[in-house]
Image (cartoon, rainbow, N blue to C red):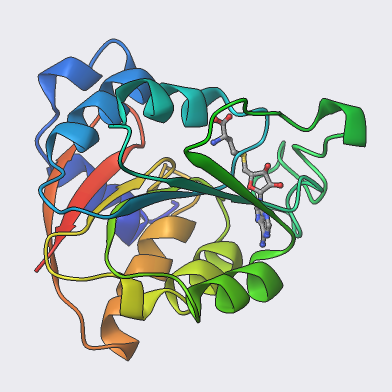
Length: 199
Ligand SMILES: C[S@@+](CC[C@H](N)C(=O)[O-])C[C@H]1O[C@@H](n2cnc3c(N)ncnc32)[C@H](O)[C@@H]1O
């Protein structure tokens, strides 16, 4: 018999946010943005066609910037049985365009684009949306933005864990262990979205 994955077990233990029961994605974004207490910019890692980025922009104040990171080349490795390497690939004419001064798009693989940006970015990040699915991609983000993550930064994971994968859960634990960081779980949606606040 298959053992329950630790990330899935953890997910099951969290309180479900009422607003994120029926509308998992939109409700979790609304809920996470209500948790934001810090000044500072927002960042999303994993943009694809920009659906959730537009949800964030609708709720984001004019004084902040939203940094959007994606290769737009799809997943660099297989994730699940139906989301293999290359899933979410976009042709150049499909890459979303944001007609919004608050948006900065950083196109490239996280391992290249994130450290270059982070070395000159202004701390703190107030809100981080992690939606890159894979352990390796989430590590490429968290390990390179550790200095921009401060007490009270809010992080929303879009695919924290499921029955068959717990990539983002493992990446979060490995980052917190390596950098000696701690956090509180705030809530989850009725799906795999999980919101945390840094201690
Ligand atoms: C699930 S999709 C994002 C969905 C999106 N947030 C939305 O609103 O629909 C995951 C995205 O992460 C990107 N991605 C995954 N790993 C990456 C990496 N290591 N570097 C750059 N982009 C990556 C993929 O290209 C893909 O567009």
